[in-house]
Image 1 (cartoon, rainbow, N blue to C red):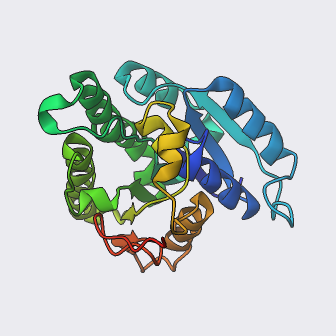
Image 2: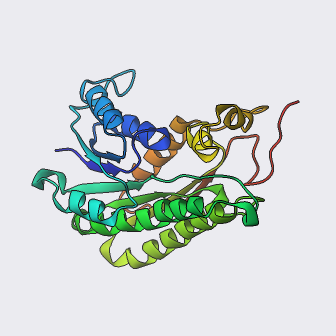
Length: 260
């Protein structure tokens, strides 16, 4: 088999775009998510050669795994029972994550806080620990999805920002601890990107989510997937430790220039 990539949260956004990008390059894919129907549809598309306009570089095989990264038991069960041929994982993309709500600290829903911490922080840890035995054997790479919110706190960002600061710190720690295994660790910090992210954050309010991107051109999921693929395609001795990327209209987590 060609190189194997495991992508969490592959049913939408950056994860889905990464699945298409890596399939087009001939990678074999382990795709995880909570929505079985979406995973099966994506599997059918990618194995059918619809990964890109030119089709995949080689025959693509997809192993869909349906579980919630917040559930440690499900993570361990699914990833410890991989068929032998799928254990040679070369790349882990820890993409699963979300924001819920954008409220002042004293008004925020604590269930939202729990969900963000359980997904963005604990879920990343659960999956990483489960996959590391395979990555160590392959001298592979980990790419974590952070955010500009993990570099700079903004109003009403509170726990979401905290969870992404944690991803940044965990990535730095991984980079140090994995030196002895020769494993690359990269963290990508995207800015505003037009995906399902805002719809999830605003709990299905499409009009409010749409307003976030008015007056400028945000990043697209494919832009982030391209950056991730670049980081995964460098020579064996080269590692991009950290990448912060925004659209031209965004300077950091706070400052934007929007056309009237």
